[in-house]
Amino acid sequence: MGKLSELFGQARKARSGSGIGFVGKSTPTVKPRAAALLVECNGTDAGNAEAAIKAGADGLIFAWSKGNKETLQAAVEAAKAAGEGVLCGLHITGGWAQLTRKSFEDFKELGLSFVVLPLNAPARLLALRVKDLEPVISVPMRQDEMYPIFLRNLSAFEGIGAVDLDFGLSGEISIISIEDALRYRAVREAVHTPALIHVKDMPDEDDAYTLLTLGVQAVVLTESKDATTTSQQIQTLRELLEKVYHDDKESSTLGLNTRS
Image 1: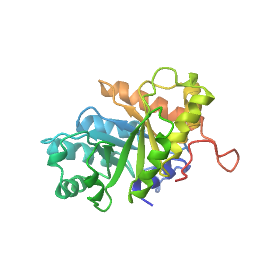
Image 2 (image 1 turned 45 degrees about the vertical axis):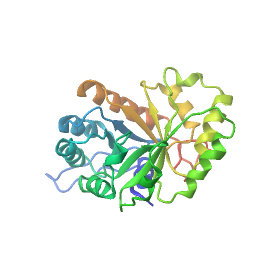
Image 3 (image 1 turned 120 degrees about the vertical axis):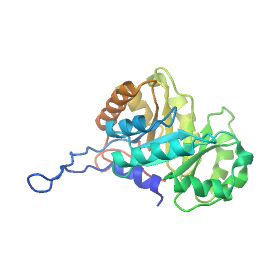
């Protein structure tokens, strides 16, 4: 099991608070959530990264840009120092000619645990296997009836840690019909790996219950322009994921489960 799968599973587990002696550092009680919470960062500000983790994010996704190595490393280190079990990843959308195995090894040295790649990325990148650096494939939504069958072939590539469902969900997610959910679910189920999904706007409770039907293990929130707003959104979304959590032992398995 990779680190991403461990993170997704950990989000669904409750942890009781603890303290050491009378003056020891205490840890708060952690409630189980329907999904892990990641934040996609607009930059590599260490202060913003630290604030996001302290607000309740489980991990961060940074955008790759050649030349931001020092600031990226500082942001990753700040995030990991702010929370236990934090994972950081890199979203790569271009510059393929510059990427080599050494690049991936450097990403790992910076403290990154996964890289997000689009379907149009060079296939050779999937062969650049570096231990503890998992590839995550971004999967857009297409209406072609054969598309889910086409996506099943992703399972032939070993080592894929998750898929990033780029479904373009925005506005009122709760208006999605059962028929629409079936189309989304067909794409999601085509690949037997954990899945992330982006939310462009802050979902409400009805939206969250709709997301439950899509079978994802993590919700990705895009960072706002200022750290204060982002922190408030993280706290609100985390509380919402706690509220809509269902224990698989007490309810049906139609939800944000960790099945791969």
